[in-house]
Length: 260
Image (cartoon, one colour):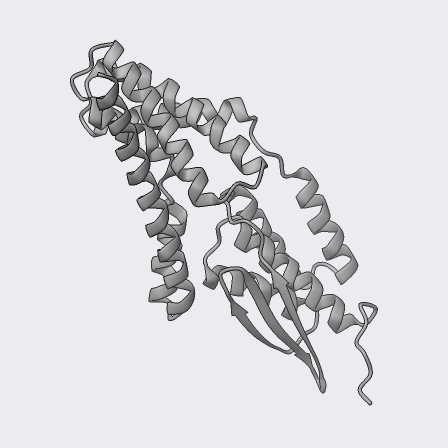
């Protein structure tokens, strides 16, 4: 009868920690190739001599081996976001583990310290940044100068709505439609009030905060890297998000036309 592997065994502890690194890197916007590198650094740095890893859209599956011993682990990946600074710090720590600078206990503690030191920017700061970015994109889309203010305030408000919906775990695509609709309507009303001559473009500029740039980039990387399944899943996510944006602007245009 096979003996059950427990977390007290070194290989099992290594697999657990390596998968945690992989899950965190996925959740902050890493590509599949980068995830595989990070997991490999941790696993081999802590004594494993072979690794098989499957990176899925919502899960990671890994078999880790050392000598005649093998451990298989499956971990669920949480909501995907973007945090490039944390991703880089995670990668640096993984490389140091690969070099043999830390034991497994020290590696686990360093990861915990990294998590505790990682902080979010205040919501008000992000909202202002989003507003500035959307207003700048609006100018690139050749909106008139009168529309800059309405775009800024509408995009900032839309981000706050998006944040609140995320905290309540609202479906991502429904959230995109609601956020895009709120931002577009406010932007359109504001643009009409200041007598902007580019109302439709003003509304489009406001919803650019929803553009899934990092997932789109990762989808292309994954497909080119020989991972068509994961790349296709990311592509579908990007397509549906863009469709939600289009629906939101279309509904907002309809509301404004009816209100005239």
